[in-house]
Image (cartoon, rainbow, N blue to C red; front, side, top):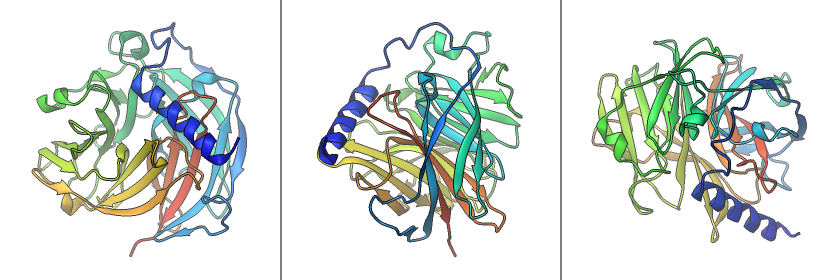
Length: 339
């Protein structure tokens, strides 16, 4: 099968996966369990090119994660430890995914091991998956409150779980502004980030996947913090928001994805300065990286940031394979060098 035909099949698979919930989403509880994985290393981001430099970003390497356990797929949100050696992801069927990321001295990821999955438990002790709250799309760590915050699409809810992570702990539902309830059912809170530094410190930053129609900008919410309110993020080139992470100086990094029959698959990383984010603003930011069908991408949905030993910000990006044989679970790493 040619590259173009493969891309077409993946795009069609993505469209089907996003348009309809996965069959069996209300099935029996998935128990906590260890997961065996196999790894294929990705040496270069662009297919057929040896370069690793992309403006202020340097590709450090990546992993393709394979497993016979279908529950491992669907990675939709991500955080990593301060040193980048541990990851905690959420899937779009309300599972936690823990793992240890091995890297070499240059920061290149070499292995993913000690992988374990567990169901997210709601306030009543029942897994969220069994309460029509399985479409969990993003996770962020609120360091001030000592909680993990997880957004649930379709029902427009956020649940807080204790930190340090306890897979058996129950979440509690978080009160949200009334405007969030008016987001589109399957285009809701796709990107959330708790801000701990900079002018927005103390704010929960939320960006919806898409606005009221395909031409509208993406709705944004500033919850709590010094300047609560609403704003928008400029949408263009058919890109949708998929995750959000904060840089040490308080600026935001937005991960976006695109899949259309005309353009194929795309991912984009956009830097949005904190100065552009305030009530009533239309944030635009600057595109740092755009990848397409000639690059090592899939349905990229999770983004996390940590600092390496030299103080550089390192970006980890993961993909949601929709548990489809046409797609891949990828973990990619980039170093960000900004003045």
